[in-house]
Image (cartoon, rainbow, N blue to C red; front, top):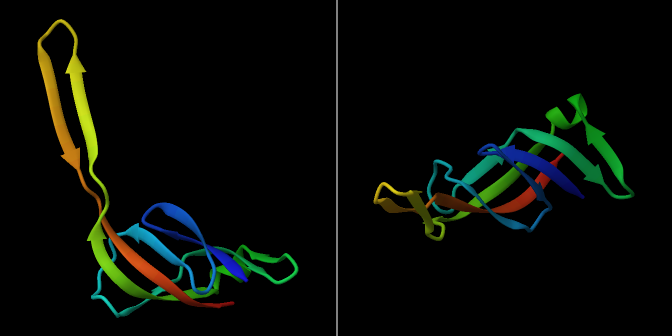
Amino acid sequence: MYAVIETGGKQYRVAPGDVIRVEKLPGEVGSEVEFDRVLAVFKDGDQALAGSEAAQARVKAVITAQDRGGKILVFKFKRKKQVRRTIGHRQYLTSVKVNEILA
């Protein structure tokens, strides 16, 4: 059984036991979080629940870490103007372990 959830403007395919890194979620390490924005649920044998059936489904997970991603360099350049600018960015991320899918 697996589900497709949406969080932080992105979609993730999750199954029980998976560990995923998502946009920062409020909460401490070890606290439980529930994803209620479920787009689809696939049971054994490719039985798919979508639409209003999947909207009632929930995915329960536990926060395992609050950290930051790798550095992304942003380089801005304007030719013939002697303008160069380099800045970096590190996104805040939350690692969650999926416990169960309630469909």
